[in-house]
Image (tube, rainbow, N blue to C red; front, side, top):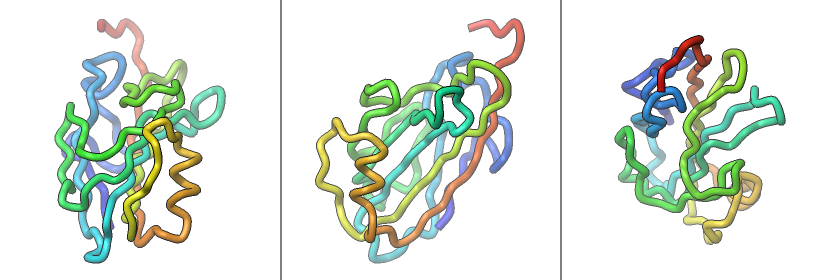
Length: 150
C-alpha cells in the first residue's frame, strides 16, 4: 500500500497553501495498492515534534476504499474524529518553532469501525487492533518563515 501527494514528496517541504500561513486546507492525497479484501481506510495526520507531545491534526475512519484519491481542500467521505483540540476537523499545520515532521498515515482495515465521532486517535488505534491489513505513511516537512504574510 502507498500514500502520496501531488503537492509534496515524501520527506519534502509542504507548500504554504496547506498550512496556517496559507489557506490551511487539506493537501491532496492518493492511496494506492489497497488490499482487495479491505473494507475501509483510516487516515491519521500527526506531528510528533509538537512541544507538548504528538499533536493530532486529522483523524478519519470508515473512508470508503474507492475514495483513494482525496482532493486538496476537501474532506473525503467517512467519519472525522477528534483532533488534539477536541474538534472534529482538520487543523492546519502550524509549528510554533523550528521545522516539524508531519506524518500522513493510512491503514487498510478488514472492517468498518463502529465508533462515535467524539473518538480520538487513541480510541481508533485500539479499535483497529487485529484488523489492519496494510499500512503506509509519508512525511512532510514544514517550518514557518520570518515575515510570513497571512
